[in-house]
Image (cartoon, rainbow, N blue to C red; front, side, top):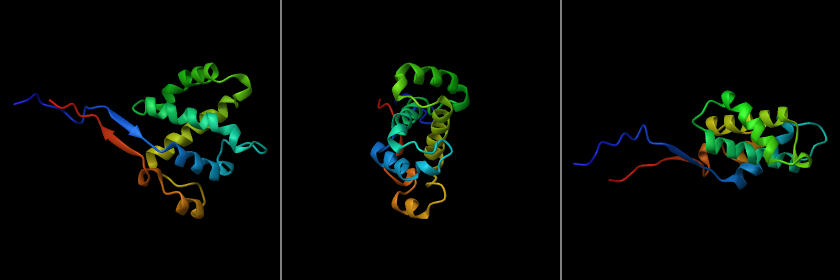
Length: 133
């Protein structure tokens, strides 16, 4: 008989379709708290991708404890011309994490929610790593 494998202790991996996610944000970024009047969607894309990377690497950690390290990483990773203010990036990170964890549709938009189903109904899924004996 092989060793006991506690699948609850096994690490989780998160998979998602980034193209679908970017389309979601393209459709509703104007209604998000991080949006500043006059800034185009393309300005936010690097920060949105950064937020998804942060979730993929740190989804088991408590977000509020990560912010100092994430801010430092963001400032190091993105040259000044590509950066938006950290306060907006922080809001984007929170929004991305909330979307992934809750699967919530775009705020106040039935049309977009129908066109883009919540994250959990899409390609995203949590997959357990299971070691085979």
